[in-house]
Each structure stands twice: as structure tokens, then as C-alpha cells.
Length: 157
Image 1: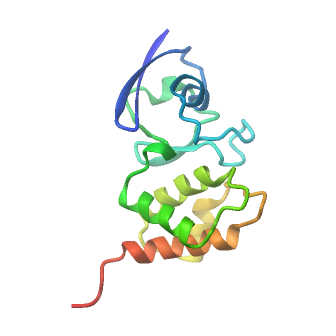
Image 2: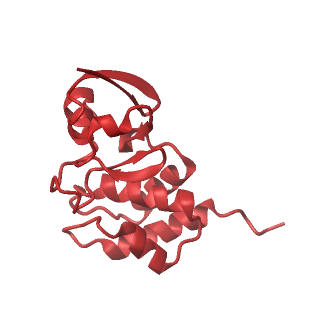
């Protein structure tokens, strides 16, 4: 069956069944391998993408659920919040092994898009379910705060 998806601003036609997990449509059919398979049960966050700007676990999301919606993967994350988060990740050397980082970045960018000045509690809530086996959580939180600060309008006048 042919399914039409809009991924990173491009319309893509895929020959997949409607129940195919979005993760596998992205990785196997579109070669967008930045989105990772972690657990397959929406528990680890490695597969996080944005659907209409909201973080979604692609491992359990069937392609039928995202037809007609805007899907953004780590490869297409070019929003101000996305760029700020990516720069903060580099500045603070957040990744260790790096496997979970695309999901972490996608969740952090969605947080900052909806809450430009998150507290530690806001960050903890938004990032819950994004597991980092290397335990870089302290650097992740620092990077989110740095990205938020870089997005804040200057108070200098």
C-alpha cells in the first residue's frame, strides 16, 4: 500500500502497510538513520521524532497515524530551538556513547519550543522517558539551560 508522509518538509511516497512503525519507515525506506531503535516499546526515547512539533516515539507510532502531519527527524531539525540545543550539546560535550542523543535532542528542542525558560523540574518532566545509559543527565540539563539562555531575548537596551 502506498502511504504519503511529509518528512523534513518533503513529501515522500512509501510502499508500506499502514501499521508499519514510523521508525522503520524512516530508517528502512527513507534512510534517515539518525532516529534510533532502542527498546521498541516507547520506554527509552531513542526513537523520538516530532509530529506537528510534538515529541513522539516513532517505534510505536504507525505510519497511518501520521499521514497528513509534519514529521521532523534529527536530520531535519532546523528550528531555532533545535539549533540552540544542538550547539549546547556540542559546547558542553553532552554525548558519551551518543546512541540516545538524537532522541534527547528532539525532546529538548520540543521542550524549548513550548517553554523557553524551563526550570529543572520542567526539564526533568519533559525528558522523563529519555534514557541515557551513560548517565549524562547532568550535562543534558545544563545544555538545555544553555540553549534556553541563548534563545532568550537580550535584556540589554
